[in-house]
Length: 388
Image (cartoon, rainbow, N blue to C red; front, side, top):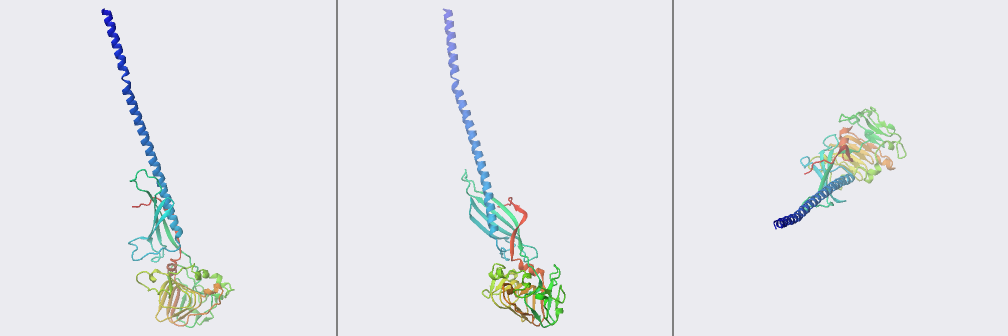
Protein backbone atom coordinates (compact mmCIF):
# COMPACT_ATOMS: atom_id res chain seq x y z
CA UNK A 1 0.00 0.00 0.00
CA UNK A 2 2.79 2.34 0.79
CA UNK A 3 4.33 1.71 -2.59
CA UNK A 4 1.09 2.50 -4.32
CA UNK A 5 0.68 5.71 -2.37
CA UNK A 6 4.16 6.92 -3.25
CA UNK A 7 3.63 6.14 -6.90
CA UNK A 8 0.38 8.10 -6.96
CA UNK A 9 1.99 11.12 -5.35
CA UNK A 10 4.85 11.08 -7.86
CA UNK A 11 2.37 10.88 -10.68
CA UNK A 12 0.46 13.89 -9.36
CA UNK A 13 3.65 15.98 -9.01
CA UNK A 14 4.63 15.14 -12.61
CA UNK A 15 1.22 16.22 -13.92
CA UNK A 16 1.38 19.45 -11.91
CA UNK A 17 4.83 20.28 -13.29
CA UNK A 18 3.67 19.77 -16.88
CA UNK A 19 0.63 22.00 -16.25
CA UNK A 20 2.94 24.73 -14.89
CA UNK A 21 5.10 24.64 -18.06
CA UNK A 22 2.10 25.10 -20.36
CA UNK A 23 1.04 28.23 -18.43
CA UNK A 24 4.31 30.06 -19.31
CA UNK A 25 3.42 30.32 -23.01
CA UNK A 26 0.95 33.18 -22.48
CA UNK A 27 3.38 35.68 -20.91
CA UNK A 28 6.03 34.74 -23.46
CA UNK A 29 3.52 35.46 -26.22
CA UNK A 30 2.66 38.81 -24.67
CA UNK A 31 6.36 39.73 -24.45
CA UNK A 32 6.95 38.79 -28.09
CA UNK A 33 3.94 40.78 -29.23
CA UNK A 34 5.12 43.76 -27.19
CA UNK A 35 8.56 43.58 -28.74
CA UNK A 36 7.03 43.40 -32.22
CA UNK A 37 4.85 46.41 -31.42
CA UNK A 38 7.90 48.37 -30.29
CA UNK A 39 9.77 47.35 -33.45
CA UNK A 40 6.85 48.45 -35.63
CA UNK A 41 6.62 51.76 -33.76
CA UNK A 42 10.35 52.38 -34.15
CA UNK A 43 10.19 51.52 -37.87
CA UNK A 44 7.20 53.82 -38.36
CA UNK A 45 8.89 56.66 -36.48
CA UNK A 46 12.05 56.23 -38.53
CA UNK A 47 10.13 56.13 -41.81
CA UNK A 48 8.16 59.22 -40.78
CA UNK A 49 11.34 61.07 -39.83
CA UNK A 50 13.01 60.18 -43.11
CA UNK A 51 9.88 61.23 -45.01
CA UNK A 52 9.85 64.61 -43.22
CA UNK A 53 13.59 65.04 -43.80
CA UNK A 54 13.25 64.23 -47.49
CA UNK A 55 10.31 66.61 -47.78
CA UNK A 56 12.30 69.37 -46.04
CA UNK A 57 15.23 68.91 -48.40
CA UNK A 58 12.89 69.05 -51.38
CA UNK A 59 11.23 72.18 -50.01
CA UNK A 60 14.62 73.79 -49.44
CA UNK A 61 15.64 73.08 -53.02
CA UNK A 62 12.29 74.40 -54.23
CA UNK A 63 12.75 77.61 -52.23
CA UNK A 64 16.19 78.05 -53.77
CA UNK A 65 14.77 77.58 -57.27
CA UNK A 66 11.98 80.09 -56.60
CA UNK A 67 14.42 82.66 -55.19
CA UNK A 68 16.76 82.28 -58.16
CA UNK A 69 13.83 82.55 -60.56
CA UNK A 70 12.75 85.78 -58.93
CA UNK A 71 16.28 87.20 -59.18
CA UNK A 72 16.61 86.26 -62.85
CA UNK A 73 13.21 87.71 -63.75
CA UNK A 74 14.02 91.01 -62.03
CA UNK A 75 17.37 91.35 -63.79
CA UNK A 76 15.69 90.66 -67.14
CA UNK A 77 13.32 93.59 -66.62
CA UNK A 78 15.98 96.21 -65.81
CA UNK A 79 16.23 98.38 -68.91
CA UNK A 80 17.26 101.65 -67.28
CA UNK A 81 19.02 103.04 -64.28
CA UNK A 82 16.98 102.35 -61.12
CA UNK A 83 15.46 105.57 -59.81
CA UNK A 84 15.86 106.62 -56.20
CA UNK A 85 14.77 109.42 -53.89
CA UNK A 86 17.80 111.38 -52.64
CA UNK A 87 15.72 112.54 -49.67
CA UNK A 88 15.40 108.92 -48.45
CA UNK A 89 18.76 107.47 -49.48
CA UNK A 90 21.10 106.43 -47.85
CA UNK A 91 19.04 106.29 -44.64
CA UNK A 92 16.73 103.87 -46.45
CA UNK A 93 19.01 101.93 -48.82
CA UNK A 94 16.19 99.78 -50.30
CA UNK A 95 15.11 101.75 -53.37
CA UNK A 96 12.96 99.15 -55.11
CA UNK A 97 10.87 96.17 -53.97
CA UNK A 98 9.13 93.85 -56.44
CA UNK A 99 6.94 90.86 -55.54
CA UNK A 100 6.44 87.95 -57.94
CA UNK A 101 3.43 85.81 -57.04
CA UNK A 102 3.24 83.75 -60.23
CA UNK A 103 6.53 81.86 -60.07
CA UNK A 104 6.38 78.06 -60.47
CA UNK A 105 6.09 76.62 -56.99
CA UNK A 106 5.96 79.79 -54.95
CA UNK A 107 6.55 83.52 -54.56
CA UNK A 108 9.60 85.78 -54.35
CA UNK A 109 10.31 89.24 -52.97
CA UNK A 110 13.15 91.04 -54.72
CA UNK A 111 14.79 94.06 -53.07
CA UNK A 112 17.23 96.40 -54.80
CA UNK A 113 19.58 98.03 -52.29
CA UNK A 114 21.81 100.87 -53.47
CA UNK A 115 25.19 100.98 -51.77
CA UNK A 116 26.72 103.81 -53.80
CA UNK A 117 25.27 106.37 -56.22
CA UNK A 118 27.14 107.37 -59.38
CA UNK A 119 26.02 110.98 -59.80
CA UNK A 120 27.75 111.97 -56.56
CA UNK A 121 31.09 110.48 -57.55
CA UNK A 122 32.85 109.37 -60.72
CA UNK A 123 32.60 105.74 -59.60
CA UNK A 124 29.83 103.45 -60.90
CA UNK A 125 26.69 102.93 -58.84
CA UNK A 126 26.82 99.76 -56.72
CA UNK A 127 23.78 97.67 -55.82
CA UNK A 128 22.99 94.45 -54.04
CA UNK A 129 19.90 92.61 -55.29
CA UNK A 130 18.32 90.09 -52.91
CA UNK A 131 15.59 87.61 -53.75
CA UNK A 132 13.72 85.91 -50.93
CA UNK A 133 11.90 82.87 -52.29
CA UNK A 134 9.05 81.06 -50.55
CA UNK A 135 8.22 77.56 -51.76
CA UNK A 136 4.49 77.04 -51.26
CA UNK A 137 4.10 73.85 -53.30
CA UNK A 138 5.81 71.60 -50.75
CA UNK A 139 3.75 69.07 -48.75
CA UNK A 140 3.93 69.94 -45.06
CA UNK A 141 3.50 67.10 -42.55
CA UNK A 142 2.88 69.55 -39.74
CA UNK A 143 0.38 72.36 -40.20
CA UNK A 144 2.38 74.53 -37.85
CA UNK A 145 5.49 74.33 -40.03
CA UNK A 146 6.06 77.49 -42.13
CA UNK A 147 6.73 77.40 -45.86
CA UNK A 148 10.34 76.88 -46.84
CA UNK A 149 12.26 80.13 -47.54
CA UNK A 150 15.67 80.86 -49.01
CA UNK A 151 17.43 84.09 -49.97
CA UNK A 152 19.92 84.54 -52.78
CA UNK A 153 21.72 87.76 -53.64
CA UNK A 154 24.10 89.28 -56.13
CA UNK A 155 26.17 92.44 -56.28
CA UNK A 156 25.68 94.54 -59.40
CA UNK A 157 27.14 97.66 -61.00
CA UNK A 158 25.49 100.29 -63.14
CA UNK A 159 27.72 100.51 -66.23
CA UNK A 160 27.19 103.73 -68.20
CA UNK A 161 27.13 103.62 -71.99
CA UNK A 162 30.53 104.74 -73.31
CA UNK A 163 30.58 108.10 -75.08
CA UNK A 164 32.70 108.38 -78.23
CA UNK A 165 34.08 111.91 -78.16
CA UNK A 166 35.61 113.68 -81.16
CA UNK A 167 36.09 117.07 -79.55
CA UNK A 168 34.69 119.50 -77.01
CA UNK A 169 32.61 120.95 -79.86
CA UNK A 170 31.77 118.60 -82.73
CA UNK A 171 29.69 119.61 -85.72
CA UNK A 172 28.74 117.93 -89.00
CA UNK A 173 28.42 121.41 -90.50
CA UNK A 174 30.53 124.55 -90.71
CA UNK A 175 31.14 126.67 -87.59
CA UNK A 176 31.89 130.40 -87.47
CA UNK A 177 33.07 132.68 -84.68
CA UNK A 178 33.50 136.44 -84.94
CA UNK A 179 35.13 137.48 -81.66
CA UNK A 180 38.24 136.67 -79.69
CA UNK A 181 36.92 136.15 -76.16
CA UNK A 182 35.74 132.56 -76.51
CA UNK A 183 37.51 129.39 -75.41
CA UNK A 184 36.88 126.18 -77.33
CA UNK A 185 39.06 123.78 -75.41
CA UNK A 186 39.77 120.06 -75.50
CA UNK A 187 41.74 120.25 -72.25
CA UNK A 188 39.91 118.11 -69.68
CA UNK A 189 38.43 120.49 -67.12
CA UNK A 190 38.19 117.55 -64.73
CA UNK A 191 41.91 116.87 -65.11
CA UNK A 192 41.42 113.10 -65.52
CA UNK A 193 41.68 112.28 -69.23
CA UNK A 194 44.20 113.36 -71.88
CA UNK A 195 43.59 116.45 -73.96
CA UNK A 196 41.39 115.99 -77.02
CA UNK A 197 40.40 118.28 -79.89
CA UNK A 198 38.74 121.55 -79.03
CA UNK A 199 36.79 121.63 -82.33
CA UNK A 200 35.98 118.80 -84.75
CA UNK A 201 34.32 119.63 -88.11
CA UNK A 202 34.19 118.26 -91.67
CA UNK A 203 37.38 118.92 -93.61
CA UNK A 204 38.84 120.62 -90.52
CA UNK A 205 37.39 123.86 -91.89
CA UNK A 206 37.81 126.86 -89.56
CA UNK A 207 37.63 129.51 -92.28
CA UNK A 208 34.76 131.12 -90.37
CA UNK A 209 36.94 131.80 -87.33
CA UNK A 210 38.31 135.33 -87.10
CA UNK A 211 40.69 134.24 -84.34
CA UNK A 212 41.63 130.53 -84.56
CA UNK A 213 43.76 130.87 -81.43
CA UNK A 214 40.61 130.49 -79.33
CA UNK A 215 40.75 126.76 -80.21
CA UNK A 216 42.82 124.83 -77.66
CA UNK A 217 43.62 121.14 -77.69
CA UNK A 218 44.99 118.58 -80.09
CA UNK A 219 45.43 119.99 -82.69
CA UNK A 220 46.20 123.45 -81.28
CA UNK A 221 44.61 126.48 -82.98
CA UNK A 222 43.03 124.14 -85.51
CA UNK A 223 40.11 121.77 -85.89
CA UNK A 224 40.12 117.99 -86.08
CA UNK A 225 39.24 116.84 -89.60
CA UNK A 226 36.18 114.57 -89.41
CA UNK A 227 36.20 113.81 -93.16
CA UNK A 228 34.03 115.08 -95.97
CA UNK A 229 30.77 116.80 -95.10
CA UNK A 230 27.17 116.35 -96.16
CA UNK A 231 24.78 113.38 -96.10
CA UNK A 232 26.97 111.51 -98.61
CA UNK A 233 30.27 112.44 -96.91
CA UNK A 234 32.49 110.45 -94.58
CA UNK A 235 32.34 112.76 -91.57
CA UNK A 236 28.97 111.47 -90.34
CA UNK A 237 30.38 107.95 -89.90
CA UNK A 238 33.06 109.32 -87.56
CA UNK A 239 30.49 110.72 -85.15
CA UNK A 240 29.39 107.64 -83.24
CA UNK A 241 25.88 108.73 -82.26
CA UNK A 242 22.88 106.66 -83.38
CA UNK A 243 20.81 109.73 -84.15
CA UNK A 244 17.99 107.75 -85.74
CA UNK A 245 17.59 105.81 -82.48
CA UNK A 246 17.74 109.06 -80.50
CA UNK A 247 14.95 110.53 -82.63
CA UNK A 248 12.91 107.35 -82.15
CA UNK A 249 13.43 107.55 -78.38
CA UNK A 250 15.12 104.16 -78.08
CA UNK A 251 18.55 105.71 -77.43
CA UNK A 252 18.94 108.24 -74.61
CA UNK A 253 15.29 107.92 -73.49
CA UNK A 254 14.06 111.19 -72.02
CA UNK A 255 13.39 111.85 -68.34
CA UNK A 256 11.82 115.21 -69.22
CA UNK A 257 10.23 116.55 -72.41
CA UNK A 258 10.32 120.34 -72.63
CA UNK A 259 8.13 122.41 -72.90
CA UNK A 260 5.45 119.76 -72.29
CA UNK A 261 7.06 119.44 -68.87
CA UNK A 262 8.61 122.36 -67.00
CA UNK A 263 12.32 123.10 -67.09
CA UNK A 264 13.83 121.62 -63.94
CA UNK A 265 15.47 123.88 -61.34
CA UNK A 266 19.17 123.51 -60.65
CA UNK A 267 18.68 122.58 -56.98
CA UNK A 268 15.93 121.42 -54.68
CA UNK A 269 13.97 118.25 -54.12
CA UNK A 270 14.01 115.57 -56.79
CA UNK A 271 13.34 115.88 -59.66
CA UNK A 272 15.84 118.64 -60.35
CA UNK A 273 18.93 119.22 -62.46
CA UNK A 274 20.88 117.75 -59.55
CA UNK A 275 19.63 114.37 -60.84
CA UNK A 276 21.49 114.93 -64.14
CA UNK A 277 18.42 114.00 -66.22
CA UNK A 278 17.94 113.48 -69.95
CA UNK A 279 15.98 116.51 -71.22
CA UNK A 280 14.47 116.32 -74.71
CA UNK A 281 13.09 119.08 -76.92
CA UNK A 282 11.19 118.10 -80.07
CA UNK A 283 11.90 120.97 -82.46
CA UNK A 284 13.75 124.24 -81.89
CA UNK A 285 14.80 125.56 -78.49
CA UNK A 286 15.60 128.97 -77.11
CA UNK A 287 17.78 128.00 -74.15
CA UNK A 288 15.70 128.92 -71.08
CA UNK A 289 18.16 128.40 -68.21
CA UNK A 290 21.17 126.50 -66.93
CA UNK A 291 21.13 122.75 -66.51
CA UNK A 292 22.92 119.43 -66.08
CA UNK A 293 22.78 116.05 -67.79
CA UNK A 294 21.96 115.30 -71.43
CA UNK A 295 20.10 117.87 -73.54
CA UNK A 296 18.59 116.65 -76.83
CA UNK A 297 17.29 119.23 -79.31
CA UNK A 298 15.95 117.74 -82.53
CA UNK A 299 15.83 121.17 -84.25
CA UNK A 300 18.01 124.28 -83.86
CA UNK A 301 19.34 125.65 -80.57
CA UNK A 302 19.50 129.39 -79.86
CA UNK A 303 21.52 130.39 -76.79
CA UNK A 304 21.32 133.99 -75.61
CA UNK A 305 23.83 135.14 -73.01
CA UNK A 306 21.58 137.17 -70.73
CA UNK A 307 21.37 135.92 -68.08
CA UNK A 308 24.50 133.77 -68.08
CA UNK A 309 23.60 130.12 -68.64
CA UNK A 310 25.81 127.12 -67.98
CA UNK A 311 25.30 123.52 -69.07
CA UNK A 312 27.27 120.63 -67.60
CA UNK A 313 27.08 117.36 -69.49
CA UNK A 314 26.25 116.54 -73.10
CA UNK A 315 24.25 118.56 -75.65
CA UNK A 316 23.04 116.84 -78.84
CA UNK A 317 21.53 119.12 -81.49
CA UNK A 318 19.93 117.96 -84.72
CA UNK A 319 20.40 121.32 -86.43
CA UNK A 320 22.65 124.27 -85.70
CA UNK A 321 23.53 126.28 -82.60
CA UNK A 322 23.60 130.08 -82.45
CA UNK A 323 25.21 131.49 -79.31
CA UNK A 324 25.00 135.18 -78.50
CA UNK A 325 26.74 136.73 -75.51
CA UNK A 326 28.20 134.95 -72.51
CA UNK A 327 27.69 131.23 -71.96
CA UNK A 328 29.41 128.10 -70.65
CA UNK A 329 29.26 124.48 -71.76
CA UNK A 330 31.32 122.00 -69.77
CA UNK A 331 31.30 118.50 -71.25
CA UNK A 332 30.58 118.00 -74.97
CA UNK A 333 28.50 119.71 -77.67
CA UNK A 334 27.53 118.00 -80.95
CA UNK A 335 25.49 119.78 -83.65
CA UNK A 336 24.08 119.05 -87.11
CA UNK A 337 23.30 115.45 -86.23
CA UNK A 338 20.39 115.54 -88.67
CA UNK A 339 23.03 115.04 -91.37
CA UNK A 340 23.19 111.42 -90.18
CA UNK A 341 19.56 110.96 -91.23
CA UNK A 342 20.00 112.53 -94.68
CA UNK A 343 19.52 116.25 -94.03
CA UNK A 344 21.68 119.13 -95.23
CA UNK A 345 23.94 120.77 -92.67
CA UNK A 346 23.08 124.19 -91.22
CA UNK A 347 25.99 126.47 -90.31
CA UNK A 348 26.50 127.15 -86.62
CA UNK A 349 27.60 130.52 -85.24
CA UNK A 350 29.20 131.13 -81.86
CA UNK A 351 28.54 134.85 -82.26
CA UNK A 352 30.30 137.32 -79.98
CA UNK A 353 30.85 137.53 -76.26
CA UNK A 354 32.79 135.67 -73.63
CA UNK A 355 31.97 131.98 -73.71
CA UNK A 356 33.63 128.71 -72.76
CA UNK A 357 33.06 125.39 -74.50
CA UNK A 358 35.34 122.96 -72.71
CA UNK A 359 35.71 119.20 -72.55
CA UNK A 360 34.87 117.89 -69.07
CA UNK A 361 35.10 114.14 -68.57
CA UNK A 362 33.52 114.33 -65.10
CA UNK A 363 30.42 116.11 -66.42
CA UNK A 364 30.16 113.64 -69.32
CA UNK A 365 30.41 110.64 -66.99
CA UNK A 366 27.74 112.03 -64.70
CA UNK A 367 25.47 112.82 -67.63
CA UNK A 368 25.96 109.38 -69.16
CA UNK A 369 25.37 107.68 -65.81
CA UNK A 370 21.64 107.48 -66.65
CA UNK A 371 22.28 105.56 -69.87
CA UNK A 372 23.68 102.06 -69.55
CA UNK A 373 22.85 98.71 -67.98
CA UNK A 374 22.97 96.85 -64.69
CA UNK A 375 25.63 94.16 -64.79
CA UNK A 376 26.33 91.49 -62.20
CA UNK A 377 29.64 91.56 -60.40
CA UNK A 378 31.65 88.48 -61.24
CA UNK A 379 31.86 86.11 -58.25
CA UNK A 380 29.44 88.41 -56.45
CA UNK A 381 26.55 85.91 -56.13
CA UNK A 382 25.66 84.14 -52.88
CA UNK A 383 22.88 81.94 -51.54
CA UNK A 384 23.80 82.48 -47.89
CA UNK A 385 22.48 86.05 -47.61
CA UNK A 386 21.03 86.68 -44.15
CA UNK A 387 17.34 87.56 -44.03
CA UNK A 388 15.14 88.31 -41.08
